[in-house]
Image 1 (cartoon, each protein chain N blue to C red):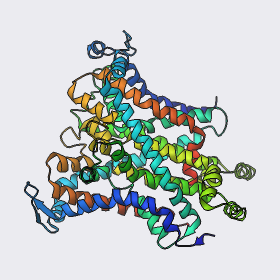
Image 2: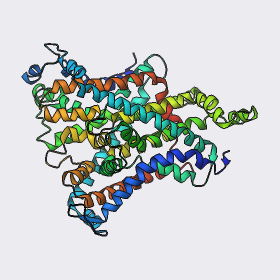
Image 3: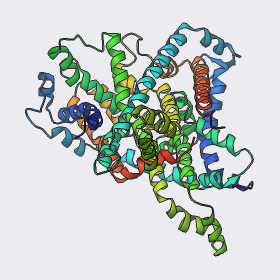
Image 4: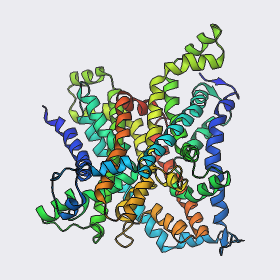
Length: 265
Length: 286
C-alpha cells in the first residue's frame, strides 16, 4: 500500500465516525444512552427499529417521502429531456438567457420561498398532497437535470439525428426509441441527482404537508421536540433514511463522477 | 453546428411552465409583501421602499450577513483544496475506485435534518463520541451550547464532513478525463509532481472546479437546516446565519414586509456573487 492511499482512507474513516455513532446509538436502549458513555452497545436492542416498523406515523413517513421523490424524479426528467435536447441541438431566440435564468432558480434560498409556496399550493388546492412537494422540488431539480442531460446530449454526434430522419423515423419515435437509449447513462445520472436533492430537502417538504403526505424528515423533527430525549429512536429513524440513498448510489456508482464532468454551466 | 429554429421554444415549454409556476408566482408574492405594511386581518398598506432601506441599515442584518460570509468563505477555503487533494490521492483504476466513490458519496444522500441530528448526537459533551473524547479523554472543555467558538467549529467541521465529497467527485471526474499520454510526455520531460499538477491537472480540472465552487457557494450561502438542527443559531445569536435569521423574522415574528425585503436583498446578493464567480472563473475561455 502506497502512503498516498492513506489520504482517501483517513477521509473515509472521518466520514464514517458520525455515521458509526448514529448506528451504535440506534441499537442502544434509552437507559443505556442516558446512563453514560459506551463505545459499543452493551445491551443490544432492536426495539427502536421495531417501533418504526410497527407505528404507521413512522413508516408512512418513509412511504410518503419515497412517493414524492419518485414523482419528482419522473416529472423532472420528462420535462427536462426535450428541453435539454432543444438546448443541445437548436439555437433560438433567448436560449442562453433562458438557460441562465433556469439556473438562477437553484440560487433562491428555500427559506425565502417557504411562505409564498405554502400560499400558492393552498390556493390551487394541492396543499398536503405528494404532488405539491413533487412539483415544488422541480424548482431546483429541473435546472440541474437540464444541465446534466444537455452535457450528455451534446456528446452525441448530430449525424445520429440526421440518419434517423433519412431512415424515415418521426421525431417522437426517434427521440424515444433511438436517442434516449443512446444517452441512458446521462438519464441515470440525472435521475440520481433529482432523487438525491429531493430526498434530502426538508424545509419545503415540511411546509407543504400536514398529515396525509408528511415526509419522514418532518416526523423526525416532531419526535425530536415532543418525545423529549428518545435519542435511540431518532438514531434508528436516521439510519433508515440513509439506506435508500445508499441503494441508489450503488446502482449509479460508475456514472456519478462522469455526470458532472460532461455537464456545462 | 446548431440549427437555428424557433421550434426550440416548443421543446422547453414544459420546463418553462413548471419552473415559472414555482419561481415567478412565489417571487411576485415576495415582491408584493416587500412594499407593503400589514397590521394583521389581511389588511395591507403601501409602504414603498421603506423596508429595504430599514434592512440595509439594520445592524442585525449586517451581523447575520457578516456571519454568513465568514461561514461561506471558511468552508470554501477548506473544502476546495481538501477535495482536490483527496481526488489527487485516489486510485485511478481498479476495484477500489467504485468502493471509494460509493463510500464518499454517502454523506451527500443523507437528509439535511438527519445530518444535523447526527452531529448533535455525535458531539453531545457527555455521551457523544466526539464530545466525550474531547472533554473526558483529552480534557478539552467542549460544549456547543455554551461556547460560540465550539459551535462555530462544529458547524464548519459538519459542513466539511457533509460536502467535501462533492468537490472530490467533481475533481476526480476532471482528473480521469486526462489522457495517459499527457503524463507520459511529462515524465519524458522530467516534470516534477508540482509542475504536473500546475500545468496538466489543474487546467484540466478548471471547468469542474468552477462548477464545484459555484455549487458550494450557492448551497452554503443558502444553508438552513443543518445548523438550525445542530445549534438553533445559538449560543445567543452567534451562529444565526442569514437563512436562520430570515425564518425567524418571517415565521417566528410573522413580519412579512421586512422578511420579504430581506429575502429579495439576500437573493440579489447570491445572484451577484454567483455571477461574479462565474465571470471571473470563465473569463480566459472567451
